[in-house]
Length: 126
Image (tube, rainbow, N blue to C red):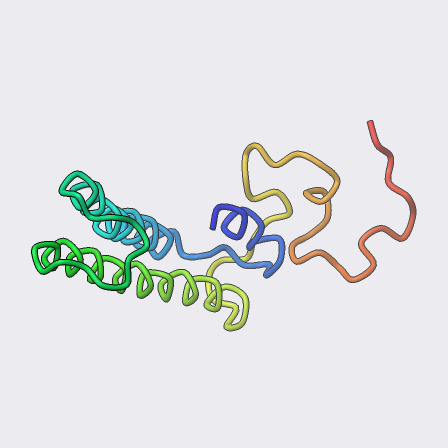
C-alpha cells in the first residue's frame, strides 16, 4: 500500500485523495486487529492451529475474527477506489514533478506522469 501511495502521483499525474487514504489506513488497521487479536485468546484457550472444525466454545472468537476479515476485505475497496479515482478518472489536483519532500532521484526530475521516452539524452548524475 505504501509503495502505491508513494508512486501513484508519478504514475497517474494526479494526487490521490488524502481523506480516502486516511479512511483506508484506519479502516484497514482496525479491521486487521479485529481479525487477528481474538486469535491470541483462542490460542490461550487451547484452540489448535489449522483445524477445519473446532469446539463450540471457540465460536464467539471465530465469529469476531470472521467479521474483522470481511471488514478488512471491504476496506481494500476504499484503496481501489482511491487508486482508480486518481488514475482512471483523473480526479484530484495535478501532481508536481516532485510531490514528496523526501523524493530524491532521477525519476523525480521528470514531469508527472512520466513521458514515454523519459530521457532523450542521458541525464547527468551527480
